[in-house]
Length: 162
Picture 1 (tube, rainbow, N blue to C red):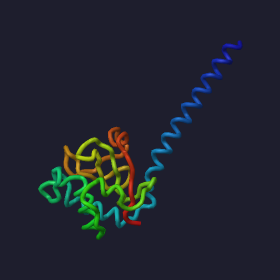
Picture 2: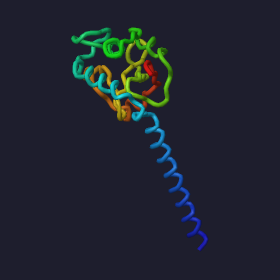
Picture 3: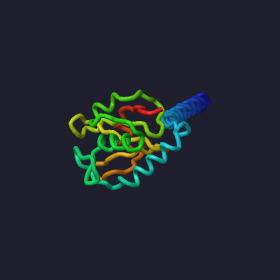
Picture 4: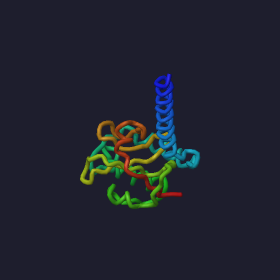
């Protein structure tokens, strides 16, 4: 009888451990997004900006409708929609504003992608885990921070406007 009870205890312990791990992973993922704190006007500005720039092809060093890169996109958005001046390159944008742990619409999100001269990539957090960026394959588009690639390459976020 003892081995049977011992096996039940081990299985129960393993189940509890598994549940704790799952709940921890779920809570840490959702705590990254502070969508309830996002300003609706910034969300609308991102949406209207996207309507103009969607599918614009990626071009390293580009900053117009013929082609744009990631830092050109963020610089253009902040200038056109928020009246803020950002540096042109990602390695300088990553030190602007203040570091944040919970994302809100308009925050800059940075990734260590290994591409480009610094290996950095930047986008603009939108909502519900989505961010706007200039993709090398698909041009200007929304991508999901929960996608395997972006989740594994996420570096940090910065808030430029409060």
